[in-house]
Length: 421
Ligand code: SF4
Image 1 (tube, rainbow, N blue to C red):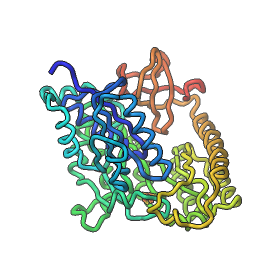
Image 2: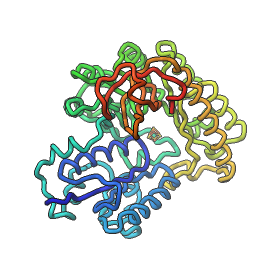
Image 3: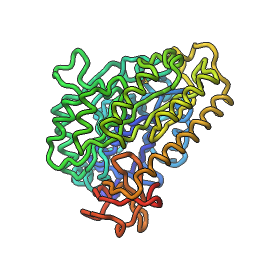
Image 4: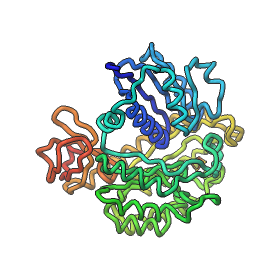
């Protein structure tokens, strides 16, 4: 086979979906596929079903995939098929699959391309993967049933990966040049906590094991619930330079009344207390968050409480989600749904605040030397990520200490205002 079979993956939704797509990408490369920008032979749409808006986006993305790849076999995967098994007929995809079980998915994809040659597969995979950050899913499933969230219906019960398997995968990633490992999960803080999990291990124990791996430079946690940020975790993070000083802790709302309706197990006071504890040991820590705006029953005062709370906490980054619940969730049947206009207006205000807080946070690093992982190159410029989860743009001549010259390198960079993206 001279010409490689090409593919494109369209990913929607959360970090776990990004991880799933990264794993699939790596497996496709291994078996001889080649990722491409133009029209591909295979197009995969990795979907999300967290809200109704997300479901509409899936449909739009599916149509885009068909338009951009007119001759391709089209695959739909992810959370959407888990809640709607009629998509195949409705959307005329060639294949649908839910979440997980990549090997079965790969087997089915291979059937579309009998000419596929598996020779030199591992070499191809290593050459064609970008080597900056490695997303590693160590946990799946959630049993919390927040009233607005479809995930417990689509992802099911808590499931942790065996520590041995996680360690082996991290060793593989490090050997292949990845500098940063991003540990992800649907409910990451509950790693190892399900009753039927055979090992006696928690997230901190696992990180401690990973820190012993030679040449591992950085570990980042993707998202963690505030109730699962333990003293043990704070101590480990503050004492260990390899763990990025960044946590993404979903707030969802700053009004205690709305938090209760959302079935979130904390108050704004609990959240603030945890932030104080984190900043006591790590004053510069980046704290990013998610917030849902326009939840049913959210009054102007509730919104103002959220706005003020976010301002008080000074998050380093804010992801704003306008409320739109799936039929299966409890919140769908809650009274007092807000109009689209009100939700849009409130979302706009919060996004503006988020931008201001983000700028303020980044600027305090001006003049400091920061370690940066190079993620991409555009002409003479490189773009890289700091441990504090913001990007900087620079030329190699600006760098204080450069140990290489390519994407995936770890460099030290003195920050000027103009560098910060
Ligand atoms: S914790 Fe709540 S929001 Fe997060 S996945 Fe579970 S149910 Fe959804």
